[in-house]
Length: 122
Image (cartoon, rainbow, N blue to C red; front, side):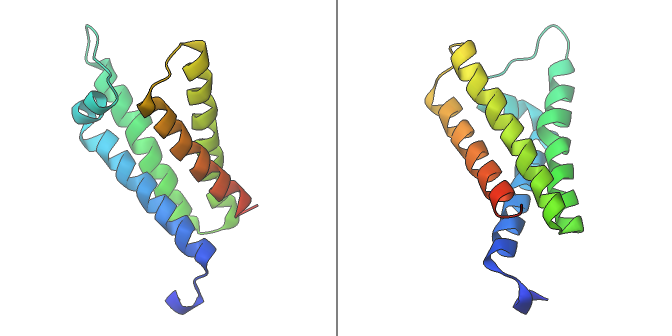
């Protein structure tokens, strides 16, 4: 099987593994993740469950699903998810006056992953 992998296959798989690793960080280390994202919990600990779910296991599921399916449609769905994240982030950068080096970096990473996964697999 490894001999038949193309460059597209390898990059797709690396994107999925990156997605899973980032998801694992959000899921298993929500406090650390929130510190990195400059987020704070409110009067309840709901923020931790939200980070574990939305910034964690959703990405674990996306990456793992794409790896398991290993079909263009699976990779497209991950690309659309990153595209949605990029749109949400750029909207917030301008709407909420949230421009920072970190927010632009995250946007750039999301946009690049979205562009690759969609354009390489459409």
